[in-house]
Image (cartoon, rainbow, N blue to C red):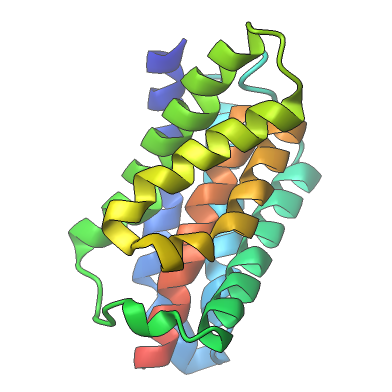
Length: 203
């Protein structure tokens, strides 16, 4: 199941990367928040493409999502990124992040590969293992969320990672409500929106 789900997710979310390529152009044409719109739209279209190929596997961890649900998840993920960024700026934590124009490899890893891999492990494999222990969704969300945050400490540091707690709680909610497909989409859009805002700030 994981192998086929990975294949479908990679194919469907390539559109997110394609949208990022257009970010600088649309910022110049439509304004600073045009990049967020691009990420949201390409994420929705990309997942819809995968949706229409019937490659998604209808199991507990992967549910068919409607267009309205895709839009809700993509839009809310972009909004969560904006709010999270403002909180980190207010707390002075954005100074801990190195600001530079991202390379193609960084975009691929952050927008496609890492969200897919992290969601498949933390809210895919680990989530399903904990479900077999008859734990409540809230308990599973806390455990997987804690492990997810802990994995980011070596890269981001403890203080900055603590600022991602609301985002982690949001991903757990999406996973519980809309399955692994939903949390993967949300994670990808969240990361893509971060780069969109970064490119806007550097423009």
